[in-house]
Image (cartoon, rainbow, N blue to C red; front, side):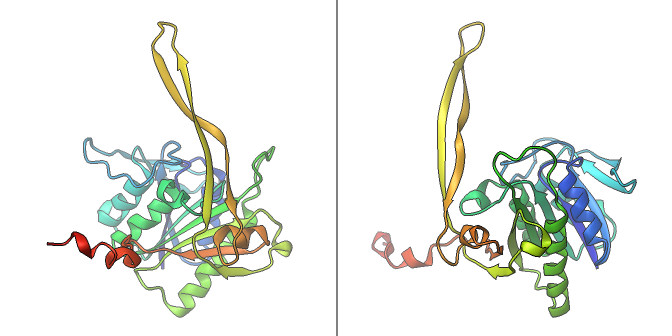
Length: 254
């Protein structure tokens, strides 16, 4: 089993190292991650410039690869031949914040897993639901161990290459995590606002700012599971068709 580990927070992120270390207990691990933070980058395919890849030594002394491309570029590079040995599974994370509800469309963590499925390999995104105002370093250990347990179960059953899972882990010690729940996407509540400022020459520039998003803890949803102390496992599909509306819009046909 050859596992590619990547992320959207960059090659130096502690969540990446924690995930890679746990994945090594399941098979051979290659790390190819961005050389900088690509949070909220969405699904990127860089085609207007060449991509560079270089070696990087992780904090535990193991060698990895880093690229100036986006998370999804890193996955594409690996699957298309930058790594000689065939990739069997792509695991992306560990993101320091949850990716729930509509976040999946923004998340570089999740879209890296999506790129894996596009390339014919199962993809799993792992995120940590850390407190909004947490001070100090985050403990990624429990989330990394959760990821290993989930993937171990999948490997025992056999992973369909179309598998795309969005895993979110509550920020709790191992002993306080209540279990795993398979969920559906919930509803995020975004509180964005536009912050307009002027530079020293009087020209306007903008920040998209606002308060941290919240979510509705409905039963059976990703956030509902997290709010109750469970790991949320949400199966995703690249088919974005709204089948409920197909018949509704037949009147447009001619």
